[in-house]
Image 1 (tube, rainbow, N blue to C red):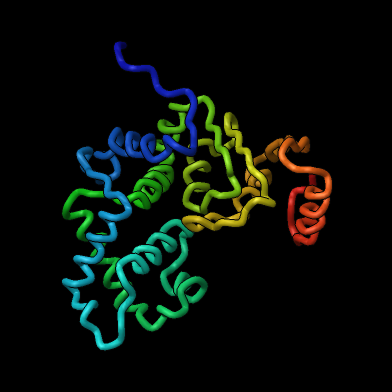
Image 2: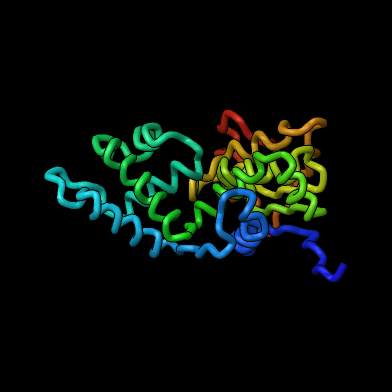
Length: 239
């Protein structure tokens, strides 16, 4: 019919944010967004949050309030991990726990400022995509655009990314993830090893596991030492 053919394969890494933004623009009207939204990079997002921080008078408090970078990290972790602010502070930023209520006000103001200006930050690209996947009819249409979804370094994904995947391919057909639970050491943007450990059991029948055991990078003594350490893990994929 003259339209460009849809992408048949989705790469999770370098093009993920671009693909997410394109999908959000395609379906903006159905999820309450303007298709002309602008995307804030990390620095611009921190600056906007800092403006709200000043407008609320939080930078002038007698008790020193967290700086904009810390505030944005708290907000981002809470969004990507899908946990409440109180839990985020208790588990990851206990030194900021006394500021829980003003932080909540700050984040409410930050969200309102983004909506008023028609902008999304990087966390929003995941959040809006995940929420879009909760609408069954819409999730089916978006998932139908892709024959195969291939995810690399799956041990470094977070709960929000897992929710997007579940919406794209709820039965697991056409979905392949590659990763190593033993290399889940960074926890970047709320990444959790649970994603890869729980992956096979998310589907019925369970996802097939193909183990890659040939190592081309390390010598036998290094591998023996590494395997001895990881063998102490209470839960893991045995290789």
